[in-house]
Image 1: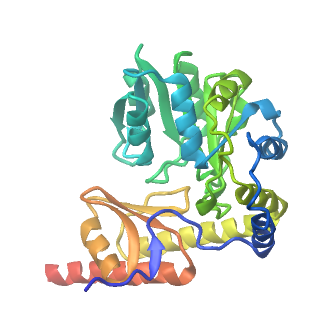
Image 2: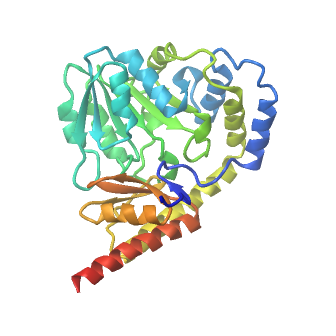
Image 3: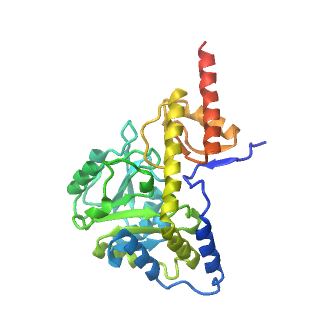
Amino acid sequence: MDTPVLHRLALNESPYPPLPSVREAMQRAVEQAHRYPQFHPDDLTELIAAWCRVTPDRVAVGSGSVGVALQLLRAVVRPGDAVAYAWRTFDAYPLLAAMVGAHPVPVPLSPDGHQDLGALLAALDHRTRVVVLCNPHNPTGSLVTADALSAFLRQVPPHVTVLLDEAYVEFARGTELPDAPALLDAYPNLLVLRTFSKAYGLAALRIGYGLGAAGLVQRIRRQQLPFGINAVATAAVRASLRAERELRLRVDTVVAERERLGRELVSLGWRVRPGHANSVWLAAPDPIDEGAAALADAGVQARHYAGEGLRLTVGSRSANDAVLTALAGVRLRQDASRT
């Protein structure tokens, strides 16, 4: 009989439900569920633009960040064109490329789990229409620094759109983090992709947005599904932005738990590289397959890439303690087998 799942740590979800003020806003919106939402999400677009301090013509909204990514690909990619991305990465990108008839060009990560920017640049040719960067990277949590990103953008040909996926940017810390929206004026082929699913804990409501040059955003908006953003999600985003200080405290707690989880795993003998998302990445040659089995036996659902790595979403303190207990057992059994 399978062990019941006690801790869901596979999808990089927030461990927190929506704040009370956000739930109240959602409930009020539900009372108007018999009414259509806006044909196009103009109110939400203007709200996000004001929050990001850009003009509304630089904001595209979609069904999660993956929805905006699909709108971009539909806008700029023709069948037979190429889409380049580091691999491994967010599993949706190969699927999205296939949906628009593009040729996928996966570029291996460097041995330390970083996106190989030089190899990505070398993979670009006349067929390439989009190159994807995740920053922080999914699943390894590695970071492309401000200097490295600027150097990369300077070398990308203007016919290639750079899709910069910043789904986890709120969890990143340090002075090397790029200020990606500040680069939009210099690079009209750049789209900065963000989401309310992770740090804001609204994964089920599917709200993402992209920031880009007005011309690029206009093309993306042509792929916008009419009535595609529901009123409950819009109300939740509006209330979340009002509660940004409370949500920032939640993010700080997740970051503190990420660092604690990493330190404890290192003390148990696991090799943990610095990460900047709401997850911790364990990679081969550490015993990640054995670790995945131990976590499953303990009722912990993690993301397991067989033979490659193990991505552990940072959950509640009790969930993280369950991870530590399970993975400590793996190391103890390994040590015992050597004696």
